[in-house]
Every structure is written in C-alpha cells, then in structure tokens.
Length: 154
Ligand SMILES: [Cu+2]
Image 1 (cartoon, rainbow, N blue to C red):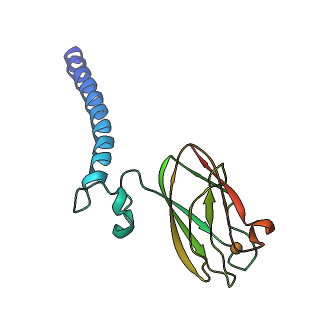
Image 2: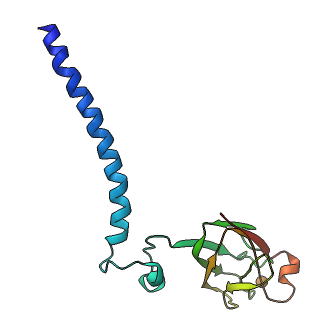
C-alpha cells in the first residue's frame, strides 16, 4: 500500500512542477502580448502615446521631472535614466518662477524640450540613443544657478 502510494504521488508531483513551470512562462508572455493588444485598436502605440494618454504600451517610456515647488532654481532630480528610444518627459513647474527643460546631446545639439511654463505642467518628447545627455533650464541664469542634470541612456 505504502509503495504504490509513493509511486502514484511522485509522477503527480513532477507533473505539477512541470505544469507550474509552463504556467509561469505562459503568464509572462501573456502579459507582453496583452500589453500590445489590450487597447481597443491593436496598432503599435508608439505614435499614439500622446493622444491615448495614460496607457503607455510597448516601448514608450515616461520620465517625470519637476522644478522645486518653493521657487528655488533647482529641479527635483539631477540625474535621469532611460532606455534607448522615444521618451516622454513630463515636466511639472508648480513654482511661481518660469522654467522649462531642454535636452542636449553630447555635442551640445538640442534634441527637444518644453516651453517655458509657470505653475503648470508640460511634456517634451525626445528620441535617444545610448549615451549621455544633459538637461537644463533655458531661462537666463537658471542653468548657471544649478538647474541642470544628466540623462543617461543605456
Ligand atoms: Cu528655470
């Protein structure tokens, strides 16, 4: 009785392990594919990230950056990081001082940025490759006062 019980249980246990393993990998691939198709229109969302708002599917990345809300000439971060590709930067300036954020590549060429805003938010879209970029506020004197930082892409 004991022996036959073990013989019965062991294959079941192995089967359960195999099944769990399959289930795990199925889950992760399900997540990936459902992220691509869950929006009502099953187009790649890269170009529609703006109009569709909250759901950033596929490779869309969003970074958040804010100016010091009390009016200091500073961002809340001096370092940002992203993966290569399109990056949406949500910039918030809740202070009474006008600010923007501009991005430059390592050659000093501007690749994108926001308008100068006061007491509101703005969005910049940039397309980046692996490397180091700088960001700064273009309002005169602000970058020199410390409104600047580094965006690392890898
Ligand atoms: Cu500024």
